[in-house]
Image (tube, rainbow, N blue to C red; front, top):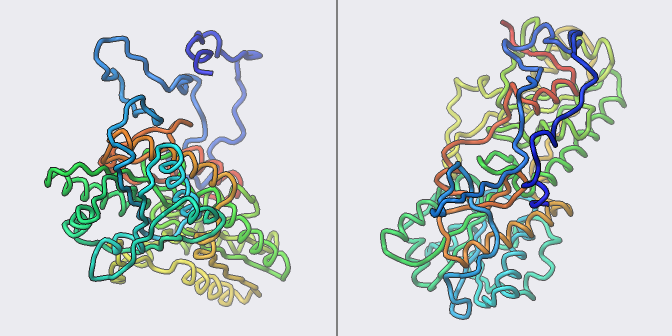
Length: 445
């Protein structure tokens, strides 16, 4: 395929047209859209066919901004017969964790001959002596069937731990490699661990694999477990739709995960287009007023007799700005419970209008994140595990493996944690959600 791509000429990708387009597209910005909402693509916008940059200069440094391509190298840094590696899983549950652990262990053992692999129990707590967690010897036999299980075989934990104590444990255990599986907080911890390792002059590699069903890590096209989460979320939406259509003036209200980014809610809405209102953290909405959610929901009930509302957990947090909700163990601001709040306010609104309402509230959050991953995510975690091991054995550190532009690549952790990936309110994903739901811009100007 690469030889075909490299031999393409500009004229090979030119699209034929029947003639000039002169008639105004009927999907022109609707009344109530946000100012500047972008519906249309210009004819001068293109996507690169070839993501590879071939530098013919003597220097191996590329002339464009690129990521290293993942995969095995001809030379490696570690002697596999003397290497001891560890795997730790941090943060919250996510479909596919066990499949990824299994992939790493089997790749280390069968492909590179690294037979000394241990699992750190319950996240970074497992490195700290005071918690007293055991260390597990990970063998191919032990991990043989864990990919069919949900949750985390090694266990998880949140909360910051002493970097000095963690690196002390790395030294005591004589670990040459550490594979860290986790989200944004874990990536930040991995950076701090690498800094402490570097300060001590140790030769321990740290390779991270991004994990979050929210799909909100920068420079990752899609995090593992996300597809499974969307699938499970779609089933919850189907249940909400069945409940809504099964009673007079029925409303199915579904709360999904998504603290800062609404990818699960947006994709689940597209996966099962029975949703009438999708609320995500990136897009503001008003409850009251002529353009507020409650008025539009009332109009929907009067016209169609039922409605389905999907809300990401981080949506509408401006409602709770006067409350001091504190922080969780990971240092994140605690969120107001938008799901139960909407349930209460919707019921109050319809009671005040003397309109019968049958509202069913569904919160499948912890069910979604703890289920076994689907086949696509199992395949994906296999690729990620292989890429992580290949990178680690060559001595690369302070990086994460990622899929970018349909290729597996190496991304510096420092770069990945600079920003958080979010749904673009003016982008194609949110435009598709708006078109699928028919929902207007719900802000009173």
